[in-house]
Amino acid sequence: MQKFFLFFLILWLSLPSGSAFAEDKETIRWLIWDQVPNFIIDGEYKGQGAGDTFTAMLQSHLPQYHHENVLSNTRRYHALIRQENVCVAWAWIVPGSKNFRVHSKPVSLAPRSGIHILKSKQHLFGKAGDSLSLAKLLENPVLKLGYLEDMSYSKKVHELIEKNRDKGNIYFSSVSKVELDLKMLDNGHVDYFFGFSAQSIFEAKEKKIANKYQFYNIDEMDMYTSMHTHCSKTPFGNKAMAAINKIITNDALMAHLDVIETWYGQNKDYREVFIDYVINQQANKLVKDPGQ
Image 1: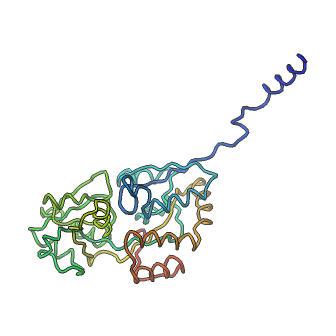
Image 2: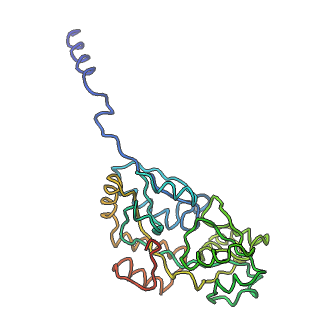
Image 3: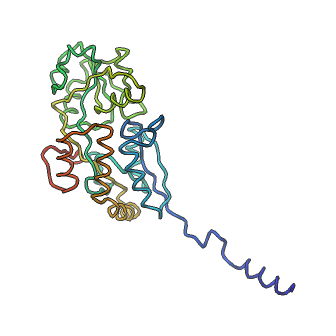
C-alpha cells in the first residue's frame, strides 16, 4: 500500500501544474469614457448607454479573451489607442489612426452634434429647431463658446476655432471628460458649448426635472458621424478584429439601433440613414467619416 501511494505521489509531482493545463487567455483592454448617454459610468442607468451595451455585447461573444474596461479622457484615449492590446467598440475614426488601427465596417451613426445653451438665453441665438452658423456666433464678442481641446468635431469647426482662437470669446478646456458640464451654462462661465442633444435630455431624466437647456444644430457640423469598432494594427489586433467581425451581424446592429433610439428618441430620417449606411453598407452623403 505504501509503495502504491508513493508511486502516485511521484506521478503527481512529475505532472505540470494545474495552470499549465489551461492556456492563459489574452486580455483585451476596451476603452470607455464618461459621456452620457453613450457611456454611462455611474448612477441609475450605469452601463446602459449606447457604447456600454455595444461593448458588453462584443465581450459576451468573445469568451476566449479576458476583458478589461479602461476609463479614459481625450488625451489618455489618444495615447492608449496606440497600445497593442487595446480595442474600442464604439467610436469614430480619429484622423490619422488608420496608420496604426484596424477598423470594422460601420457599426453605428453618431447623431449630429451641435451646441447647448440655457433656454433663458434663447433670444440671443434663435428659434428652437433652427440650425445656427458657428461662424456668425463667433463674430459676436458677447457670447462665449466653451471648447474642449483634443476633441474631433469637424474640419470646418476646427478651422473656425483656429481662426478665432485669440479673440477672447472662446474658453478652452481640457477636463477629464469628453464633454463639458452643463453647470458651466448655469454659472455663466460660458454661453454655449458643443455636445450631443441627448446630454441635457439624459440629465433631466436622471434628475426627474424639466429640461432647462436648448439644443441647436450647427451648420458647420456634419449630419451623422460613422462609428466603428477598432483595434491595434498588430497581429493581436488583427486576430481580435477577425473574431469581432463575425459578431457584427445585422441582427446585432438592429438591436443596437433600438438602444440608440431609446436615448435619442425615434427619428425617421436617422433610422433611414442607419439602414442605408450601416445595414446595407451603402455610401450616404449625410454621413461623414472623420478619419478620411
